[in-house]
Image 1 (cartoon, rainbow over the protein chains, first blue to last red):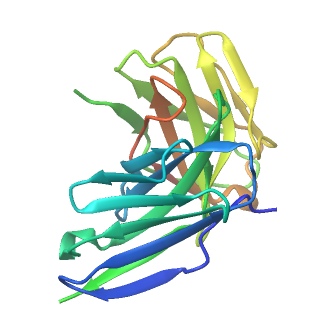
Image 2: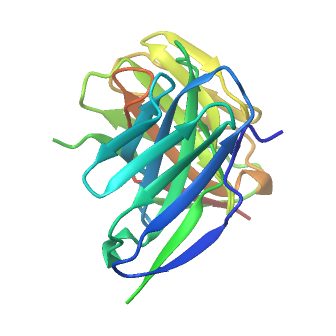
Length: 113
Length: 111
């Protein structure tokens, strides 16, 4: 049973426009959410995170929104750049959970020139 | 600053062979993790460790073993390799429960 779901395997966006990547979760015990970015033949790298006590966190061009009642979070990238083309993983953890992050399957973002 | 180093980067094993995937971190992180990623899938946790001498199973531990004798090293052992273990393996370390640093991965093929 998937606890973190990314229902869009791929997303194509024009350069300069907004990219919106979505993630849903089922475990109400999750209280910390992260986005990782992965290029081919490399390991995932941390992008941005949000605690369950917040509904928005912003870092430069990247903003993550959390809707706890809907168990939904989204990553907004504005403006989208060619270097943003990568696979984006949504991940979640429980309070005090040292037993590893739970990852979604990922969304392949393609930025079109 | 090397971060998390995984060796080898690629390996082909025959069914029934064994091997050890090496993982070393130089950030003095207590937490270390092994994940596997199958095509089109997310990362699934194999084993994790919260400190030297302490290890525990993750979601998919069958067919694997780990040890953590030092803070820096967290090797993953595959015994009796099977085709189902064909995957990309990622090691990660963190200073808390969230701030993971990943290695670049080991691509393993079992034939």
